Length: 233
Image (cartoon, helix red, strand yellow):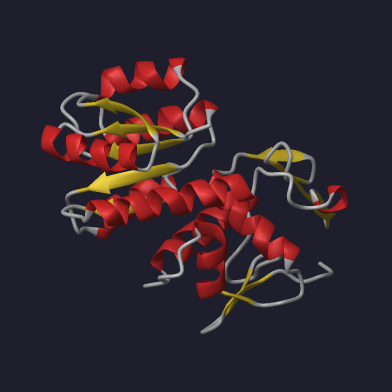
């Protein structure tokens, strides 16, 4: 079954162009030029991915992303016309999985879409053996079937990307996972450009886990290399 993708952008030429490229990949596209119509679609359709412009005439992309994360865990890609890092960090903070800055090449966006869908499918598929679908140690429990995570029996509200990062780190307990490897595993993109995206997600994971960067119990930074979770905590 073809993936259902939401595209929201008030610049009609951009939205129309993205729609053409996505349909060429046999995706089913739901296209809107404003936030209100997009919100109705989110509530009425079973979507697989959303592409949200930050600047919209009514409801901004950040608010739509928040609305999605209240009920859904499918990937969200934010479009921003600004180079400012704050927009990117804000999007990631609110639960976005990736961002792309305008102007962009449509083929690059299609590649990001494919990477996000691959990642989401990978961590929601039946690939691992049954005994590998639940990781539990030191009060931390990750369930790959339900995409739920608890810490000391309290549920952590993680985005799909945060869950995937934690799953990769926990699956490799005792070994340092480089930022580049983490980027490839979670984002499905071999073109690793900088560490900012990984760092932002790690920071928010630590905040949700009440873990300290200076004196971490779970996620430890190995400077110049990557991140590590010990086998025994």
